[in-house]
Amino acid sequence: MTSARINHMILADNHQIVLKGGNCYVDGELYSGQIYWVYPNITDTLKVRSYHQGKKDGEWRKFYPQNTLKEKRYFIDGKKEGVHIGYYHNHKTQFLYHLENDLYHGNCKAWNLSGQLIRDQNYVNGQEEGSQKIWYDNGKIKANYVKKDGRRFGLLGTKNCINVYDEKF
Image 1: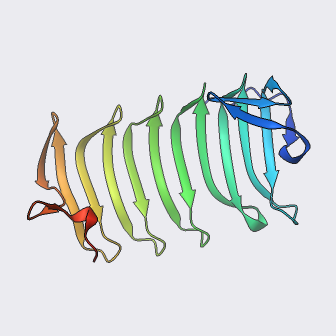
Image 2: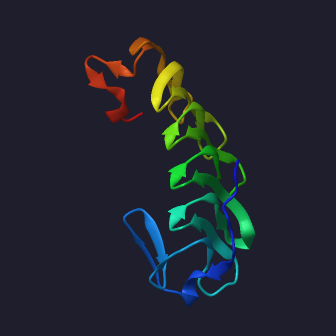
């Protein structure tokens, strides 16, 4: 993973930050460097974002209080890239996504708060491809299919022409 071309770091509270047209401006200028935010009334870091010539670039991090990592994401030239990972406050993994050029590419997983896998899907250039599995929080299967050449084969998550995503279990 390439890192942002960081030349300095600033505290957001001390500057005027404007996000406009996919670009970050600090005090009226396209920004290159890192910006960090802190939680109100405490000095713990809330988030850190990296930019190069106004575009998202490098590692972005969010934290719970006591500087516990909440999520880590990567960007190159304004686009999502690489492994994006998030954690619940109990330190269990919430999501693990792979992206290339701002699109899902590879395996993407998500877990519920108790640590149970609820999503295991595969993508190629932003399109589902291969095994796709989704579960309800109670462990029951919601969808289990294979996507090949644009067609789905298997349990698609529908029942009696009603999308089960809309059902309550």
